[in-house]
Image (cartoon, rainbow, N blue to C red):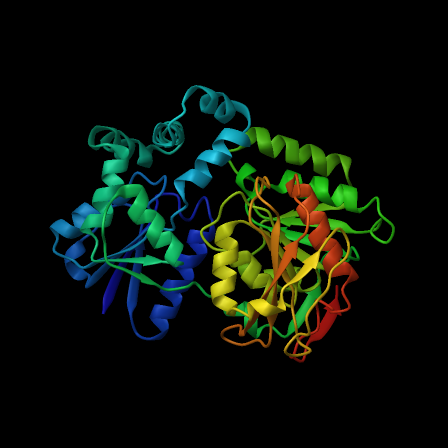
Amino acid sequence: MKVLFLARSDIFTVKGGDTVQIENTAKELGGIGVEVDVATCPKVDFVKYDIVHVFQLDWVPETYFYVKKAKDAGKPIVLSPIHHAEYEVKRFDDIYTFGLRKVVGMVVKKQEHRDILKNLYRSLFDRSKFIPTLKGLVFGYRYSQKRALELCDIVVVQTNKEAEDLAKTYAVQFQWVKIVNGVSEEFYTTTTFVDKLAVGDYVICVGRIEARKNQLKIIEAVKLLRQEKGFQKYNLVFIGKLSNHHKSYVEKFAAELRNNPWIQHPGFIPQELIPSYFHFAKAGVSASWFETTGLTSLEALFCGTNVVAAGVSNRIFLEEFCGKADRGIQSGIEGAQISYGPPNRLSSLNVHIWLDPVFTEWQKSFVCFIGGFGSSAQGVVQYLRVERPADSVIDGIINSLRCFFYSKFSSHQTNRKVQESRS
């Protein structure tokens, strides 16, 4: 069997989670004898392929035209939309943007029009996007996305919520299947970890440096945490490329690096080396305004690291992956006080998730005890209810990190034989 993967034009120059998903899926399919080609433009010979798999729906002007050409060639089409709820994106654009994007958001209120302007702006620097963007304007941006969903034979989603939101946003019915992303092999086969940073205790955040990932709020939280007794020597490590689309934000991030020597930014790290960076961290933090799935949080868990994560999608993804616990084992936290239920094994990891990066609701968290490692993580989810409202993402991060650091459960209690070394 021969399969064609069609991706955004800059999939290998502006790498993201979709790059990892495409590369790993192609690798695993190759392992079972399926030949996979990856293309970034529709100028390919569709005849020689049995299936066409298109990636990304949001913000990508090429998708509809990929799907249309594959349909005209009579090929079965799979779509992985990697969809973000429009209301989450709009809230982010309304509240937490910088520079030109902030000015545009003040003038242009409809999210569809904002997305069109973003693509037009990016087309100035990537000419391959210019024609698809103009065609999208002619056909209608949302109409093109709706037609892409209608023309596909099957849509692959990460959660039930993603499928529901697609149907609601585009007012369309389509066939879908939920296939949850796993982690790359190195995250559960690595047994030798090397502390490449050698900075002592640190908190880690992995992801492209951009406003959506909320790194500046993480910095504010750790600044405050470092003022407390026992945390003065904690460091903060960011791994990821600097975004080309968020220059004002990146400048603010660079200023924080210059002014705070306890913040480290090694830059982009190859996927196969990241397990060691996760393993020696006290906690991994994902404070993104929105994500399709909490994949970096899952990777951290497999490396023996506690996780603090924001957002409904993170909660749903990790909850479904780990499984639910009996709601009867709820307990409350307030400030630095936390009460843990007994883990099902000694090899336990903790996950705290709050639902809203701006805390317009009550803060909610849960603890996920992972009972083992292997090709999949098995465990239960234990919910914790905060007894007071929180007014900022900073409070959420600080309280969750306190819980981990004060907990008697070590983030490195694993049931694997681990050889640790320092460089």
